Amino acid sequence: MNGEFLEAMEQIAKEKGISKDLLFEAIDLALVSAYKKNFGTAQNVKVLIDKQTGEVEVYALKTVVDQVESDFLEISLEEAKQLNRNYELGEIVEKIVTPRNFGRIAAQTAKQVVVQKIREAERGIIFDEFITRENELVTGLVQRKEKNNLYVDLGKTEAVLPSTEQVMTEEYDINDRLKCFILEVKKTTKGPQIILSRSHPGLVKRLFELEVPEIQTGIVEVKSISREAGSRTKLAVYSHDPNVDAVGACVGQRGQRVQTIVDELKGEKIDIIQWSDDPGTLVSSALSPAKVVRVDANKEQGTAHVVVVDSQLSLAIGKEGQNARLAAKLTGWKIDIKSESQVNK
Image 1: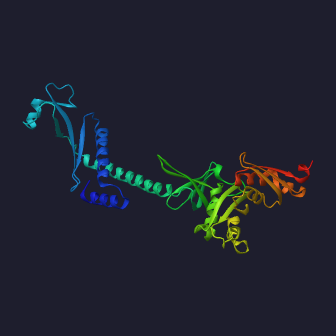
Image 2 (image 1 turned 135 degrees about the vertical axis):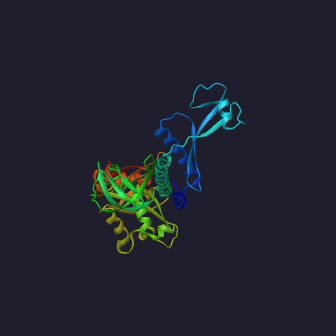
Image 3 (image 1 turned 45 degrees about the vertical axis):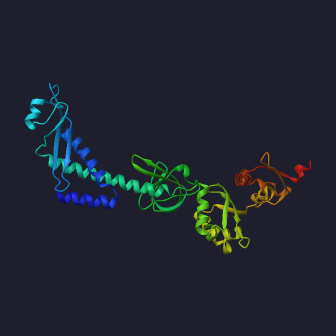
């Protein structure tokens, strides 16, 4: 190593936010390993780097003893005193054993360590950035497909959209620009792993926050959301300002706001309802577009018995029970739907 390399190393340490002392410590350990590997020795050694010139010296560490049992680890008192007459039994002697060509090996090893530490630092920076963005929205480009998983380029790093978090009705092509929900950020041996979702209900919530300024400012609140990805979402919203219509704010003028979100979700239907603390009103609204005649709610059991006119029964239940199922998820109530003729039997 030379002075120029050390200067460059210090500059890199500053730019990447790596502690210079930790960097030197890592290089010292790596040089000890490199020495033992290249020169096949079992002796205890330490490596010292002159931080001004870059010169590297290897010292064998030996304990002063009366009778030497291992030449690698011990030195006799007589021999030690030849080096320095002040040595006593039990002390550690440091003897220079730097090989002639060790400078080249040291330089290569140091470069490898610096590259590794830079990689670790960059991974750490990416992890720290994205761990704070869990449950947020991110936009990226589909880069490649592997085993039904999509790998999405987020600019600084790559994220994975697993097959389990994709929407069955959506088709994804290379270079498609996707908005995704950051489901989880993991720290792995290969660096941070960012897991995305297109099917999570949080994606719809974040899209509304993006499109509706009243949600961003907190005037309108998304109280609950239920979703069957690719098919239908129900959203319950509430306005903290009596002069602001929560549903109207989310729909937008001529339906522009909600249509932007529907387009992003590839045509997924979205029902937006007014949140109410009254269970009957909430359950009735949640079953929209069906018209409800009566709701009998039992708070203790968490059940709501709903009555609709005969012609509205299939609409209230929905195709394969979807409307009732989403309404139950949205409200948190177990919903039992019957027609007027069924009740009056």
